[in-house]
Length: 360
Image (cartoon, rainbow, N blue to C red; front, top):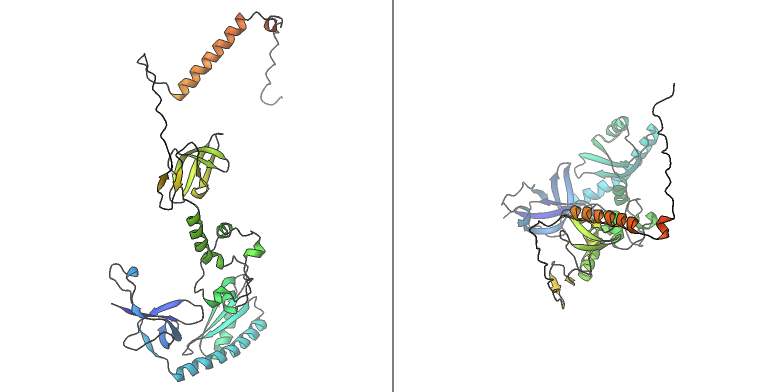
């Protein structure tokens, strides 16, 4: 079985997997590893363990890089020296940006362990032509220069700060990666949809809405029974009562045809079974528990004396309309009341038809 360790290069950064080899590596040790950017010094946050079987059900183990060596005191002193040199490089780069009058804002500077590359992180509203800036920096530092543009969330992660809760930002303390946050998560937690209250200092939705949404969802599912709709079920929605005509199992939505001939699409959580259906409790495992339910008495079917096939809905409506017109005309002819006889019949001339086209 493949042995792995988890290494993190910066606080609240992404965890990378490496092969410890035959070295005795413990959690909290510093190691020197070979990355795509060169040699880097990182901290072990996950001790030696087997490669998770869930990630390789077929038995295939992807190639994992092996650590270079365990960090020594000289290596840690070199890392501290690089941190001091990063501050000097930051000031030099800021002066060069003002000299070239570039519309960019420098955020952070990062040295690799072997000083093979220097990475400058910046933000800008649009693309920036920094070719002359790279030439000047390469002439000064005599090494490879990389300028990387980051977004507003990465900017808040690099700079740090205090959130609206009064504590340090989640992205700078323990969140290793940014997850997608939607406005629906704020609705599930009954929060105000005011942008100033649900947005962080970066101007985006609060990251805490994501990892708190799972807990709120579990509590909601535990306290509220789940109803799994079926075709032709009578349900109640916000617009009224109707019958389900179609179900989308992927999005967990149902199309309901209301009694008012209106069609609406609602989520499964917004549906309630009608009172005339079976009364029971729906658990999370979609089991139906019937409480004191008695089936209705069967209505005896009327025997059809004729062998005529049953009429459809449209045929019945047409038959009723014809009977209504026939009965109405008979009542007009046979009625001797003054209500009908006293009213004279007036033949009004027909309105002339409007000619079409333009007059010449």
